[in-house]
Length: 73
Length: 385
Image 1 (cartoon, helix red, strand yellow):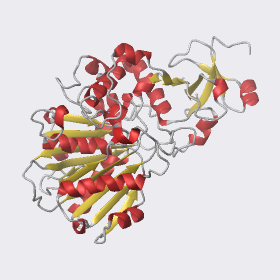
Image 2 (cartoon, one colour; image 1 turned 90 degrees about the vertical axis):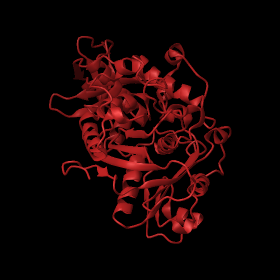
Image 3 (cartoon, rainbow over the protein chains, first blue to last red; image 1 turned 180 degrees about the vertical axis):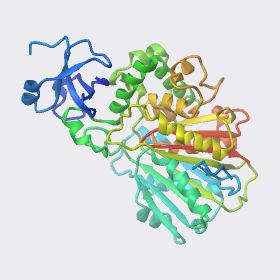
Image 4 (tube, rainbow over the protein chains, first blue to last red; image 1 turned 180 degrees about the horizontal axis):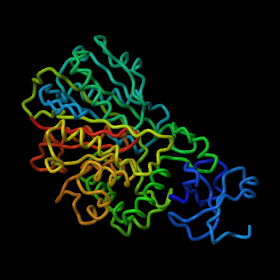
């Protein structure tokens, strides 16, 4: 996780109910940087994160979990 | 002339003067939004002031750069019938320095003698939000699907990382914002004039955390105009502001968030600017720093070599920015005076160089540096002659 923000403003019409939410800029092992949602506490720059295919498929967006703090769901 | 290695425009011999400046009463226009108000009207009002300030006939103007407004509409409304060149620049903050560089280049190459730069912004009345509507970055639609949007969020992302790498603190951002607000209190047309302290800053609400409301530029209505000329400036017996040098560097990728916070490209612009001007950072009496969001000020201070890499936070907290140190954003900047996307900073530069800045005048100001860090990085140095 290169960095992250916590979004407190609903720029999108359907975002109000989600506020505040975490978005991170994640550096993939292959090199590219991608925006993604993050689950787990202990947010920190350089924290290791793992792609969560189940949640990503459900949400229709990229979700990564903080390693070592992966929630049960 | 500059050394052959420098890509900046050295204008020492060209003697390109800012003959006239104009801007609207931002405070007046902030009191009420008005759906009938439009950017062209605001640009027109600013142009009329600039023309009067220059003391020249509109027939003299043979070049037009319209920003955030349509050049065809503006040429017609302003009655500019002697144009030899005309065009528009996108309505974004990165274009302020570009407009000066392009006007200077047009004059230096003989395409026109006298160029009007006109800018109009009706963003507040039109409900502009700068978020939620995609944007020019190539990954914007993907990012938006993740809930990522707005320039401030990208700058917030960079500041979190920058703080991690260099130990910068949010209090440094608060100090930048406080400096602007204290300056705005001395500027009759500044939108926000109520001072706040560091506790007030810390209590302001988050927008894209770690950035708070007080780190954000305003959204307001206004117009700005500058008239640049290569002709001898006659008329009123007052000091004249000349453009001494400009430089531009590009850092365009698929995201507004850069892994080095624009540092490498900003150093290129800095190197070219000081070489073209044959000056050093220490030679500047006053700074006008593009401050769409307060972290951008820290990035500019480092890239344009007012302090070392990673040192801007401490440098600001030590009190190096301000009326009793190095005056910066003397009109109140984007966070307190007005968000005219850098163009307000340009006219404030001219006012300071002329000695016309009223209660906020920097004593003995002869040189002002305008610095903008963004995908198009620019520097402009104005000097009094």
